[in-house]
View 1 (tube, helix red, strand yellow):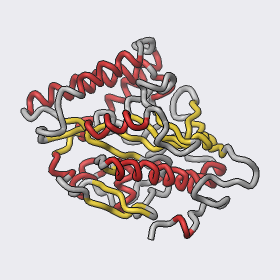
View 2 (cartoon, helix red, strand yellow; view 1 turned 90 degrees about the vertical axis):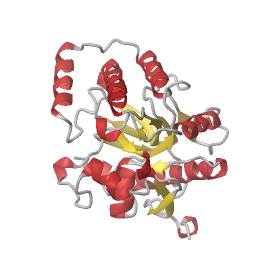
View 3 (cartoon, one colour; view 1 turned 180 degrees about the vertical axis):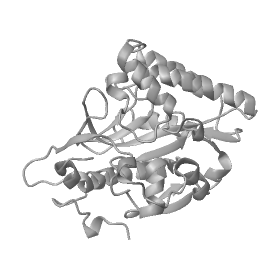
View 4 (cartoon, one colour; view 1 turned 120 degrees about the horizontal axis):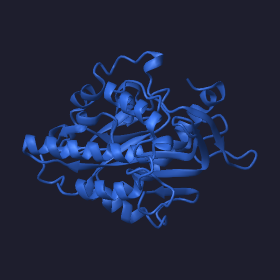
Length: 305
């Protein structure tokens, strides 16, 4: 559960993240980069026409070649507005995630999901979507190897990066978490070297020519291997708040794979969210984050027509 202060600021945080989406959307449009809503963002677009009311972040997936092109474009920061930043593990010394982020530096989120609280900037997550082997047995072995290496990575930054409270975890994950809490096995490994190894493995198979693709750092393990037919050959757009964003063409098959009966909201104890203790807005008195007023409302002149 969020505390009262975080609950009161959550919509304001969402609208700041919506501004980040607009920046990301503009760059992808100008550069003709493919991108898709995934995870709770896609679910929110279908079920709520925008953010899931209790959601606190945004997820996009990009075919690998588009993802790598985005990294090249954003690494120097010149394509981003003032007070925005781009995080990638290869270029950001203190950033320990494989996927990338665009952040608004004026908003701090105190995330208490792990054993150690971490302070993050308001963000959208951008994941690479990688091709998988076309032969089922080879695909299974390849993905199993990736999952084992991903687990080594999570153990290496266990206290900071593992969400101890995510609902719906498989039993084996809870057993691993419990064992690691007691033994600290693997927690001293070099996280970035492990990520380099994952990076090399992921790039063995191209999006083009693969019949399936996967978000290897998604939350749903083997369910993340998705037929490319679900994505579609051309962008399919869905309403998300004040804009239209691309998502999987076969959205019903996509969302059912991850969430089952996705149109039915979950019970309170199954709502997937971070343990946020505090949201801090760094701005001069009387100022508002770009794109919303002091109440967190998007002004009419900035709303897409």
